[in-house]
Amino acid sequence: MLKNLPPLAPFRPRLLNDLKGYNGEKLVKDMGAGATVGIVALPLAMAFAIASGLKPEAGLWTAIIAGFLISALGGTSVQIGGPAGAFIVIVYGIVERYGVANLLIATASAGVLLFLLGLFRLGNLVRYVPVSVVIGFTNGIAVLIGLSQVRDWLGLDIAKMPGDFFGQIGALSQHLHSFNAYAFGLGALCVIGLFIWPRLWAVDSQFRRQLDQIDTVSALKATSRLPAPVVALVTLSLLAWALSMPVETIGSRFGGIPQGVPAFELPDFSWETVRLLVTPTLTIAILGAIESLLCARVADQLSDTPKHDPNQELMAQGVANVVVPFFGGMPATGTIARTVTNIRSGAVSPVAGIVHSATLAAVVLIAAPLAAHIPLAVLAGVLLFVAWNMGEWREFGRLKQFTNHYRLMMVSTFLVTIIFDLTVAVELGLVMACFLFVRRQSDIFRADPLASNQHQLTYRLYGSLFFGAVAKIDPIVNAVEQGPAGLNVMLDATQLISLDTTGLDALEQLHKAVAKRGGHLGMVGVNPQPRSLIERSGFAAHLHTFH
Image (cartoon, rainbow, N blue to C red; front, side, top):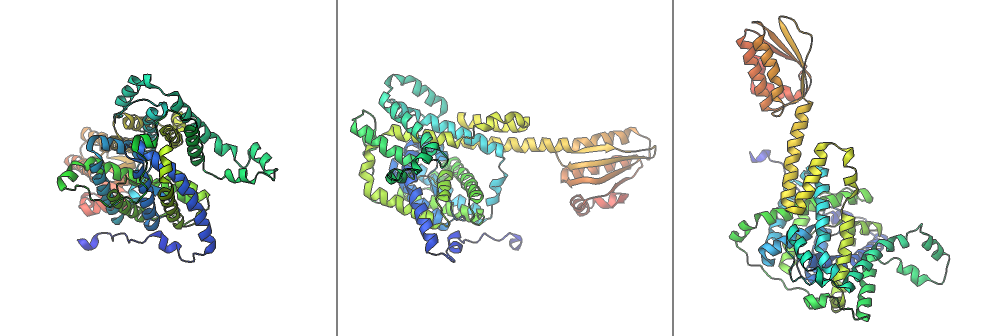
């Protein structure tokens, strides 16, 4: 029996292939891209960790360690791994319900599960998640991310935000009296700046064309290459510090960021704890797999590198998520925004991702004390911008173009993600997708009557005869039972594309009804899949005509 099992996926990182023929020109491209995306990752990593209920260093070292492992061991050439906005809601809920120590155990357990998914070649299964479900929970997560940042954006005095949607709404409404206009102003300036900066320096913008005609502003031109989040972080932090604005900062809430490498620590592990964390573990693993492979597909579309290996990518994600918890990290996955930045900056191999980690580590180790002055309202502005770009809001306007099935799956997944959690939303979405698929396929199947006489009824079968469509055989059975004795039935199966065991049972019941009345049942034009099942079951021997 073991000989019939498919072989395990080989563990071969894409880096090994990309290093063949690697030269100085490629190294220069990867160094530039890696340094750029490393700078972009700095504010995002801190913001994701803080929004998840963790200290900022948890996000930074996740980006460094997991980013290195995912690039070095992964199945893509240009994907960047690290903490992602999609995990914010999940991680915050786990921390609130189970505590940070159990989050680390759940993350490591999810890493093991991710590795096994890749090892047993299950990477392609993620592609079976319907697009409507993916859009629904992506938009739902974007809403929750935006909601989670309202406290810091408005500067509200809330000691701890609840984890559920309605609890957060209630807490925000009860503390609106503590509104901080300075925090609101910084957050608003951050969001506005993030929207304007890329458009200001766009190649076809009028401002850029005018600037290109001036030779004495090379420093200003060089500034245009800086990522918008970094510009916002530095300028607004300096503004808040220079004006002594009474706003909460990383230093006032967390005491700053440690300048050293985090110590390796083993969480208090027990199998009893793992059993209690099954749901969080599955949630992290499912979301990590979906996000990383969706990101890899985006990278395939935008770059000229070879297509990704989904199984190798899952194994790399698994290794990263097993390792980072021992350094106090959070779940990691592929990150679309940083991957796109990496590609547009000229990356050609996983070396760029490794350089991204090294750049981020250097910044953290050298400039960590400066992070204490970063206002939390600015990081909230960065995440509000991330949430806006993360959501596919146009899809709501396009719902009228699709079927009721599509609308139901997308809207229900969106609402359940917001009201309950992602795991329930994905489970509901998949169950609904299966149910609606069965219904759609059952609607497609037909048994149309053809020219008949007093001795024979002829029907042509269309589509798939499976458990969801067997009721459409009942009219044929009724016609036989109500017809004259000795009535034969001929089934034209040229348009029957598939047959399952329940459908076969329906044909057997039809045969019994025909035989009981002294007639014969035949099938002609039988396609390969139905033929195989009919022959293997022995039913072919009972058919008067079968070809």
